[in-house]
Length: 295
Image 1 (spheres, helix red, strand yellow):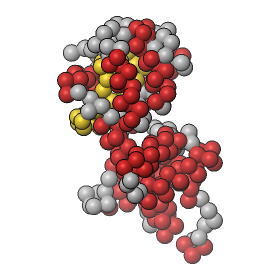
Image 2 (cartoon, helix red, strand yellow):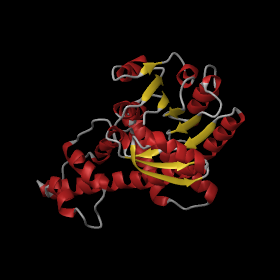
Image 3 (cartoon, helix red, strand yellow):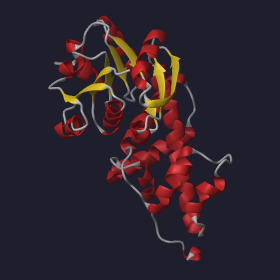
Image 4 (tube, helix red, strand yellow):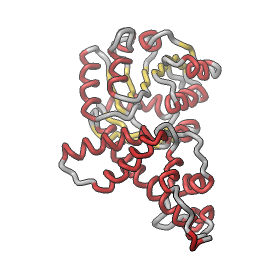
């Protein structure tokens, strides 16, 4: 069944979500400050809107894919924002990765405006969005989460209701801790294999099905070996998410020493000007003189 959706934020992730929604036969109106990003979706059948309010005016679902709570707040509640154009009862599905407490505040503000809210951050990145295989973790009222699935089933293969508003964002922070540590561990292991003279391209096959296997190992070790830095994500976005996890850990008094180290490595790379690069650029952290004994 075709759904009427609006998309606010057509960056790398939002753009991929939009492409998939169009390919699966849904009606999509899109707004982004970057006209070039909007044009890419218009070429696939989307309708361009002059504002978030206009985009939301005829939609049953409004999907936001933005970089921070402040940007989400402006897009939804600012001048010409979603709330000034959306019909009462419209369901906002925030697929951004933002702080759980900020999400709760935004959802409360939406309720005051007669709108519904589901936080549904994701895992899998743009490649999985394009083939409808995202992993989504949703927070919100049971009925709203079920309603959101009418649209989100087109972009996901794993959709889990984690609890009330904010629970999806909390789960995403946990996901990012595991991903951040996984990326760093695989990058470090790749460099060890290269320095030791092992064919690192064979390692994912050799370890497939064992306890060390993972989606990150299978996808990223070959990319680490080849220095394949094509962008499917951003290092500085991982910094944002790991900062969020550390903030949550401080509130819950949870010790997270490995996360702290992982966050520092990502901050170092961001400070070195690599924040806009994909996680594959973690290999830059291991640059150094060749080890004579392995030549």
